Length: 282
Image 1 (cartoon, one colour):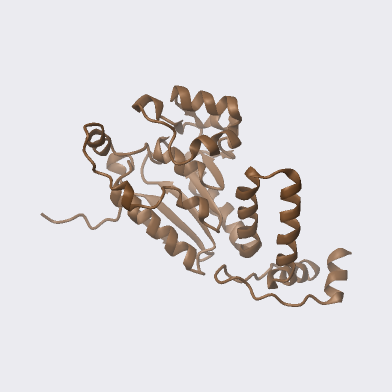
Image 2: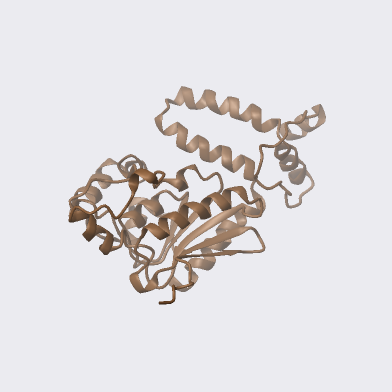
């Protein structure tokens, strides 16, 4: 029997540094498997380490994004089998520690694990007819992967309670009203729009600054305003010693596109000259 050579996640890197990750089990609507999870984590590790990757867009092949765990896995687990070696895998929250911009292009069914992964992206675009569902209570499960922490921060406590308790499906249109998605896009334009947005981040924003901002957004969820303010002051001092600060100011003064270094090792701090500080404050 010949093994299927097609990977369960496809990758493509644009000339502008945007990595497109496509969940690729269209015959199963991109339902999640152990093979997919292992490759998923591996690809995020590669994308983080690769300076050529400045942003990532996540989508699904065919008509679905990801409807959750493959039913064959759920069926085995509900019968007492152990098809999923959870004690040997890292938490299913890799996107939360990814330091580069991550955009979800939700093209269809998005439930269970797929719902969780979409929520862990920084920005979500969706088609109006996309179907979102937490789905856990309908399977006799609890909210997994920290979604009970994340979802209220996106849509509010009341909406999060509704979605998690009822497991009801909502369309992309309702998801936009709730704040679950950032923008609705017609199907033919979904992927081009998401890639264009990611390209803009990759080409005009400092990778180093965006990585710090992502850390702020995550850390400040559990901080007071004063703690957030004080932490921002420390990060600001660090950012001002990095090369991206000088390049950001110079490119603005010279009215040109900035040329920021790729995200890799932390930038080597440099002394900012007095004239540059004066230009930045003027």
